[in-house]
Amino acid sequence: MSQALFLDTSGWFAAMSPRERHHGTALAGYEHALRDGDTLVTTNLVLGEMQVLLSRLLGPAHGLEFLDRVREDTRHEVVWCDAELGLAAVDRWLRPFRMERFSLCDAVSFEVMQRRQIHRVLAIDRHFAVAGFEVVGAVPGS
Image 1: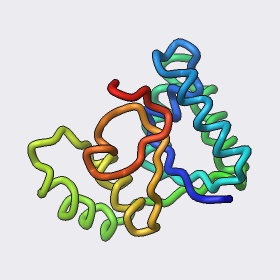
Image 2: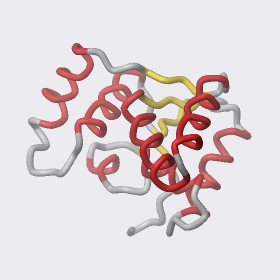
Image 3: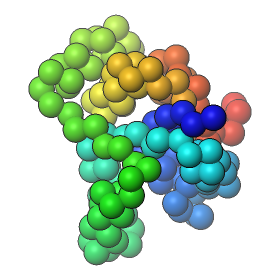
């Protein structure tokens, strides 16, 4: 059954990088979503983080190639953050969770997930679980 899976930087990068501690679990989650025909949803803020990571580790050409591949792959859907989305994310996620170390990118991701009723996320950090989403790609207890 096809669903949507949100792609966070932490899980997506772990799936792409064999050096990452959670690579195997994250890659399995990503490949499972592809096999099931899930729509892979992310934001332009996550793309920005991914492009920077890849550019720093592998060189600028790799960061640009990544952006091109995502744009050309119809299985990936990018939600672009505008002022309304960003402000709603601050009000709904950063203010009430002010004791958490959520980034603006996290908050916008949470807001997109809530609005689109996406319950699962490829991530390896605990922020998404704290916000109430099902984390795919993390090792339990990590």
